[in-house]
Each structure stands twice: as structure tokens, then as C-alpha cells.
Amino acid sequence: MNEFQLKYGCNPNQKPARIFMPDGSDLPVQILNGRPGFINFLDALNSWQLVKELKEATGLPSAASFKHVSPAGAAVGLPLDDVQRKICFVTEDAVLSPIASAYIRARGADRLCSYGDWAALSDPCDEATALYLKDEVSDGIIAPGYSEEALAILKTKKKGNYAVIQIDPDYVPAPQEYKDVFGIRFEQGHNNYRIEPSILENLVTKNHNLPEEAKRDMLISLITLKYTQSNSVCYVKDGQTIGVGAGQQSRIHCTRLAGSKADNWLLRQHPKVLSLSFVEGIRRPDRDNAIDIYLSDEAEDILAEGVWQRTFAVKPEPLTAAEKKEWISKQSGVTCGSDAFFPFGDNVERARKSGVQYIVEPGGSIRDDNVIETADRYDMVMAFTGMRLFHH
Image (cartoon, rainbow, N blue to C red; front, side, top):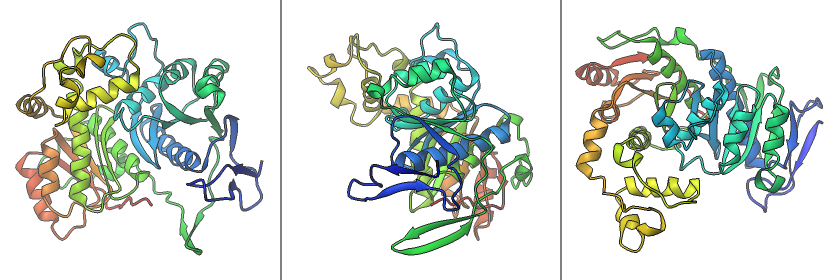
């Protein structure tokens, strides 16, 4: 198949639309179910590159949850502990494969933003992954293969219209890529920069104590940023993104946005959140929305008399601002990555408030000395990679 006709482009008025191979060769994808759209394919091809590179860099099965051409989350296939199972709504008796764990953790990074996501897997989709996806709101998936059981399950989603794409894992894109904007053609070389452990050797802070787990999380943050709309900043903990700030014009706004998402991820594990008692039969998206509102400054919107009864079996106690601050202040071991240099130390100051101990960024600012000095003040470890990772 050399081309695939799409219903429309980014919007219904943008017709005709298609994907095709300019050189006349076959597309490296097969559509096994559904009819993916223009944005679906943008998500699929960007997310596939992310998980493929993440597995190559870490050696672990990898997954991503994409929305509007940026990752809501990405993760490697480490086991889920009891708390992670609870906040991701995994049943106690569920047997999880490494690739299922990777996707559950990727989606668990930001469950609100992952609503209606595009899923990407570095490894073939198995039954365990498909069973979890079956109960989540998702638009489609891309993977290098599917078991018979997994494909049968996925074909039942969205009344049989769930988009399932299989990609050739050996496909290598052309060295040059093109893009038309306002009738003008752009050309550039494909970004084939390899993100691997050797780029983490330039430690610029006084503290050089960089554990292997932190190196892994640095790689995850950088590879995630490589496929996130710039400007972007990414927080990672224990092999899982916990906050992605994408598409902001200001670097500090990226850091704040990613930090607020990381804080939300940490707060989802607070005892008061874990003990929330929901009404029977509530849907997962409704639980996610309820938790998000409960953790926000608008908690009263869901805790008011006559309102809370629609969601909770027992009225929750509010989680106060002081309790939130205390819980987040106890966190540590978080890694923060940036797709371009931090221009000021304020980014480090903000990252510290979300438990960041490790920072990886290109370096090259005229104020690098201020940024390093700020990191040294908090005994952080900072690596300069020398490589910018803008993505548009």
C-alpha cells in the first residue's frame, strides 16, 4: 500500500487528505482495524519513534500515551507497586506483562490528559495490555505486532472502530524530510541524534553522584522531549514521566507547567486521595476528573453539599494547601530535563520544589554560571548534553 486516503486533515474542512510515500514505495504501516485520521497518524508516528528509541536506550519495553502530537506520558516496563496499581485502577488479580506495565505507567503519568489518547508500544501488544486498554478511553494504538488475543480484544473497542496500526520495526525513514507551510516547502535532515548514556558524562555541578536509576531517568526525559512540541520540560521518577510541560513560549512556564503536573502525580498518592470512596459503578474518566478537581484550588466544586453525593459514597475531607505542601516537600529523587538551556536559575528553584535532585539540559546559556550555582546550592546533580532537542 503506497498511500492511504484520510477522511480529512487536521479539521473537517481540510480536504482532500492522505498519507503516502513520495518515492512510490509501500507504507511501513498496516491498518488492522478502524480508520485512523490525520492527527492520529501524527501521534502514531511520533509516539512510535519515542518508544522505539526509549527501548534502544534503556533495553526495557517502553510505552507512550500521546495527545495532539505531544506525549502525556512515557515509561519503561518496570513492575507496578501497590500504590501505582491503585492510582491506575489496576485490579489486584491482574497479571501484568512488562509491556502492559509500561503502558499503564505511561498513561498514569497524567491520566486526565491521556483521556482519548494514542497508545504506542515498543513491543508487540499482548493480551494483558489489550485488557487494560479495553476499559480506557483511547483513540488508537501503534505497535510492531499484536497477539491474536490482543487484536480480538482491541477490535471490540469504540463499537469496532478502534484504530489499530502495525508498523514495520525495521523501517528507516529517508535522511531528508519535508514540510509545506503556506505553500512554501521546508527541508531539513531527519533528527537522527542518538540519545545514549555517553551524553550524560559532562557533570557541571559539584555533586557528581549520579546513580544508574537517575541516568535512566535522564535518558527517558531527553527522549520524551525529543518528541514533545517545544519549548518543553519533562520530570521523571522511577522510569516514568510524571510531568510534561509542552509548547510554552517561556522556559520557566514549561518548568512550572511540568512541575504542577508532577505535583499532581505525587498528590494522587496522598493517603487522603487513596482513601477516597467512590459511588458504585462510576466510570474511570469520572474518577480521574473527580480526583483532579479534588486536588485543585476548586475542590469545593465537587465537595459542596448536594454535589459530592454524585461522585463519592462518603464525603471526603478536604486536602488543605498546608497538607499538599508538606506532602510534596517530602518527595525526592525526581529528574528534570529540558529541550534547551535554562536561561535563569529560577527554573532550578521551581524544579526543586517538586523533589528534583537531577537535572539534564543542553547548557550554553550566557547565565550557565547562575544556573549551576543555583543547582549547587541545593546539592543537585546537573549534566550538560550540548544538544538542543527542539521539535515542531
